[in-house]
Every structure is written in C-alpha cells, then in structure tokens.
Length: 394
Image (cartoon, rainbow, N blue to C red):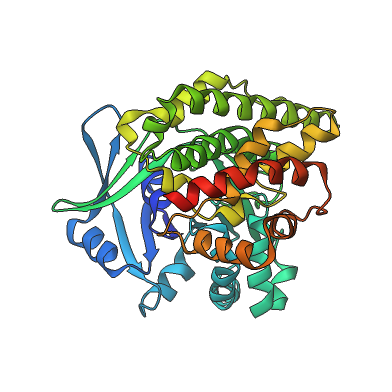
C-alpha cells in the first residue's frame, strides 16, 4: 500500500512540534507548507525535523517530513493527491487560507472521487467557520460538498510546543510529552482519514465543542493568567512567573473560576458527554515545566483575540456570572491582558493606542462583545488602571 500523505498548512510550533510527529508515528508522509524560506530550506536540507521533549534532554528525529513554499508550482499536484489536509496557521489567518485553498479544493473534487478531510489544529471554537468563510468566498459551490465529500473539523491539542529553533542540525521543536488530541467527529467525513483510524493519535469525539471549550477555558485561561501577570511582574518565562507565590495563587484562582464556569456551561447542554478530570495543580505543573523555556510573550501574544467572548478569559467569566459566581480572578487576568504592551507584539501595541484614543472601557466592550455596563466589564475596568501603570513603566 502506498504511503499516505498529509499536507500541513503551516510550519510553526503546533505543525512541527505536534502534527508532523503524530503523523510520522502513524506512518504518514508529511509536507509542511510555509512562508518562511529559511525554515523550508532547513527542513529539506536535513530531510526531516527534530523534537526535544522537555526534561528528556534528547532530540527525537522524524524523517519523511519535507517543506514547500506557498507559491511553488509543484504544490498544486501535492494537494490534489493528498489523503489529508491540516492547518496550523493561527485563527486570524484561517479565512485567508480558505480563500487560497478554495480553488485547489475545487480542482481536487473535480479530479478525484475520494473524500477528504481538513483538520484544523487552531485552538479556536470558530476555526471551522473562519476557514469555510474563505472557501465559500472564493468558491461558493463548495458549500454543497462540505459535509459530504469534504469534512472541515477542528482539533483540540493539549500539547505545549514552546519553541521552534533553526540549528546547525536543522529545525528543532521543544515540547512537552502530552499527546492528547480530540477531533470533531460530527464535522469530518467518514471513510476518509482520520475517521478511518489511520491516525491513532487523533481521537474522534461527538461532543467536540465541549472538548475545545474545556481546552480554552481550563488550560488556556490559566496559561493566560500566568503569562499576563508574569509579564507585568517582569518575568521572562512561564516557569519564572509561576515560581512567584502571588502569581501562582492568582493562576489557581483563575483556573478554579474557569472550572466553575465550565461546569455551569456543561449543565446547560443536555447532549454533553463527561470529559476527563483535570486537576488545577496538574495544569499549573504543565505550564511551569522549566525545560520548556516558554516565554511569557509567546503565551500572551495577540491579547485582542484572547479577550473575545468565545475565548479563554471572557467566556468562562460570563458563564460564572450566569451561575452566580463573581469571577474576580478572571477579571484580574482580563485587566492585565488589556494593559499588556509588549513591543514585539504589534496587536498589543495597536491595542494600547486604541485605548489611549477611545478609553479602556469602550475598547474592552467592543473586543469582548459585551455591553460597556456589563458586570464583567465593570470588574475588569476597576483593575485595569493599576496594570496600565505597571505596563507603562516596563
């Protein structure tokens, strides 16, 4: 049987530190599609990538991984022949990727009767919506194929991949050893990978929205808490931030509130299925692993996206308020995020300019889709000025 091929759109941390190793372990050939020519050339020169598992000190080599640029002539043929397509580009790029992919996917459907799935490793509840917006914008006729011959579904990845480094030996990713990943069984087409069992590490679940919400609200809420509070405290890495008792305590509080919010959310969904139990200390140990050398600026980047109502801070906070719990810890995180101004993060810099022009209350209400007089907006703005003063001094 011919070796199966997956085209992964993206060559960043998730693509190289999780998706490619998972597929190679299942015997797949992997083609990473990337814009960075240095990364592309390094992958191809060494005919693979390496992954360093934090704490082990040894690199694991994965051959059978190649890379292509987005405009290479041969990419069209590779996509037409692929058995699976994955994305790991970040939610903000998904609609653009969908527009680029639409004509190629149309050609694929015209030339082959084989169904194909697009699995979106994007850590967003809106990933499917964002990609299909782009697909249908370019090729409205694809709407008739999605759900029949083309599956478009999300993935909830629990692995932390903290670094991608170009070394003399090629491209190396640094990650923890977590391998848990759920995919949306209701959105993907049966009879095509991974629904045919050809990628054992991708576990289909029917209640996928519960799983991605759990990932965002529990794991990412605490992750964001330690990152934003750590940045304001002058910490460089997540482990440094969580070594500080006051930041660790605030992170515990934020996760505890997110847990209450998630339980309240599940109670409103009659079709929900029980999810694995997570302990707060287990999540914090996950963030704080010193071997990851995880920069707080990596975790804190793009604060505007993280303050959306369907994301990691505001989502569980609103669920808490609906359940009668006042989310003071999550308000602290939102305030710190609203005042985050790392100079290397253009979105953060632009956000501060907007706040200076319009005011924190109006900007936060607009980003979060909340009324300016909402209780959570009030709780956040009460705390924002103190963090703004800290951020200005950094």
